[in-house]
Image (cartoon, rainbow, N blue to C red; front, top):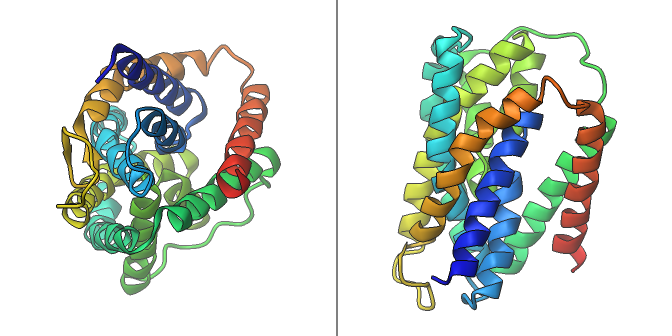
Length: 264
């Protein structure tokens, strides 16, 4: 690994941590596209660069997600009763999502992630006010929804907060508890997804040294080294910087990335 590549991983970690703390957007939104371009510049096999980026992103989210969950737990805002119900189904969904990723070629995985980026950007620009909340669904319905969230999250290399928080707020949880509970669910998605990407990527030709399946550990280490300490800084900055303006700027950047992924 060159010094330029290492610097790129460290810089990606700083950006992912700051954005996560500042705007509440999961690190995968930043990490996956950054890794795709870093891997391309490093000469990794194009056939597997997107799979490698998604699996590696999930591995970084185990660390950052655990730190975030612990922080919310200390504030007493996590609904652990819901986490215990959701987590097993999120894990099953993450396994399904990682298996599905193994069946898709890089072009389709890129398009799916591009559509997700498009959704995130438009949602940040035009998010509507929360309509009336409903009660939590029944346990079978919760399991089905959690399986879907886990599948899509693993497929995209995210911890699921972008999907889980809106669902929980619509189900009657206030935003603080919804964010905290989603954060506590994230590590289970990430861990299950990582195991799945390691298995489905095992033995593929063209993967770089230092990888296990579709997880590239040097990138994981470099990103975690800076993402974990930068996230609290972003959270502190959230109390002093003009968040509506920052969200619009970030949303435009995300839409540019989406356009590049979909039509580049």
